[in-house]
Image (cartoon, rainbow, N blue to C red; front, side, top):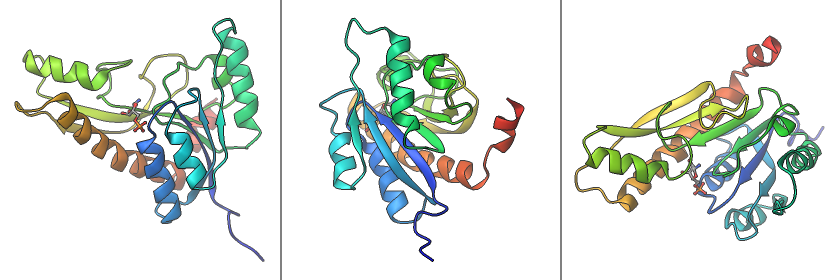
Amino acid sequence: MNHTHTHLTRLAVLISGNGSNLQTILDACAARILPARVVLVVSNKTDAYGLERASHSGVPAVVKTKSKDQDRTTYDRELADLVGAYRPDWIVLAGWMRILSPAFLNAFPGQVINLHPALPGTFPGTNAIERSLHAFQLGEIQHTGVMVHLVPDEGVDNGPVLGQEIVPIYREDTRETLENRVHQVEHRLLVETLSNVIQKPLLMTRSEK
Ligand code: GRF
């Protein structure tokens, strides 16, 4: 009997840009570090390099842009139908720069995971790395970090935390040097956290619903 893909956890990855975190997931799946396979990549941006990374790996890569006059709920419902058709076990937001509404989230209760380049409760939203460097230079913080969390609702970067790690900031840091250090930690923490979640399913999360 052909066992390939039989028990592999199905991941849908949503991106908006370069896709270095997507690449890390693809590589970890290919190397069997993650007992999973990426069944779909969706981008809300047509020029996202992550789409090419998906195609290189033979993964379906779909662009789903939102026109200005389309309402958010309709867009999110269409997105949920698109993603649902690939029957993912988990939806990973890896640099997806849109806030998802209940029209999407309710279709995948307890299944949506986000990556954010800051520690829980700090620098929610965009440009978190730049803002953390600025706060460090003002002496307001000593370090920053990375977190991986569930996305139960429309809260921005603040769902139940699945993994987090501190990232040091140095006096001589520029935005670029700090960004590189944050990305390195993201790539490792994201795979570690997904591996934990896949191997110790958060069944309790879903059953509590
Ligand atoms: C990451 O820093 C992620 O935490 C943030 O957007 C960035 C995406 O990077 N939300 P990439 O596209 O995976 O390289």
